[in-house]
Image (cartoon, rainbow, N blue to C red):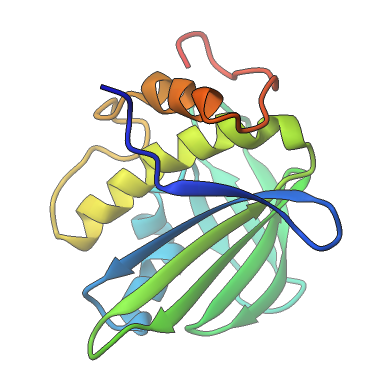
Length: 175
């Protein structure tokens, strides 16, 4: 049985490709905001630990990803607790949090891709990361995005079958 895909591929008005994921969490926006901006919490679901200077032009430090060297990015925009955008490598990530009923937040992650051929690879990675975030939001353990509890390859193959742009190198020996 193929993996159930929750992401979508889109072409932005300026022609760049992007992948987008949306979830609804049973927490107010301030709580969901901490999932993204608290370094210790982000380490449980994001591929790297995020240390963010929460101001336009601030630095984002990425560390702890076993498949990538530590790096930095730049905060492009921040409106606490509703919007955060920053650079990550050549890509742009944005997180948008909107009220979705009392005590619920609609969480949208968009990755604007520097290279279209990274779409299937990155979307598969986000599927695994967001499974970890979903578990965290429910108060359950998951082992983080690198915990091996989800089959990344199954998601990747499903994105390939769906025709999502692909061809970028796959990092790591058993990615």
